[in-house]
Image (cartoon, rainbow, N blue to C red; front, side, top):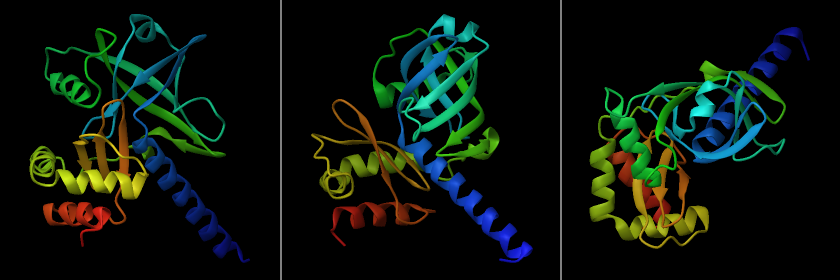
Length: 216
């Protein structure tokens, strides 16, 4: 292998590792937050810019040593070094608290925070935190599409959960959509349905759901 091809190979492997880590990140909606010597399970959602949001304890806000494991501390899972920034539920970022409630219900803690990723480790690869950010390219039409699918395509969504995830959800609800997949809330949990291709429009989204359901 020449020097040039070796560089290309390693660059390709790094890109692949990043893509796998980002896909894993967006498939997880709960994890274990370590702050100092404490370990507490938290549930998360994403902002439109790809930052993590969660209700947190005051002790988490006061800690200078915080890490998030998705979904837990197993070495094969995603380990994130994070910083925690509090925001007010009554301010400009109030919609983030509303989004969390849509996914998870009422929060167990009263403080809201954004968790910024400083660095990531996934299956032997180390990744700079900002590289993990993925903006939602469908944010302008996300709410409308969720309503459309829940109102007009409920049976297709139910079948898609069975076909893609092998899970029969009772009354699944579409709560989030981005270019790479769907977030679906069940009675007890939220799960991710990955799209086979990048979605860029309403037509792409509805086609993806139909394909997952096997109706097309």
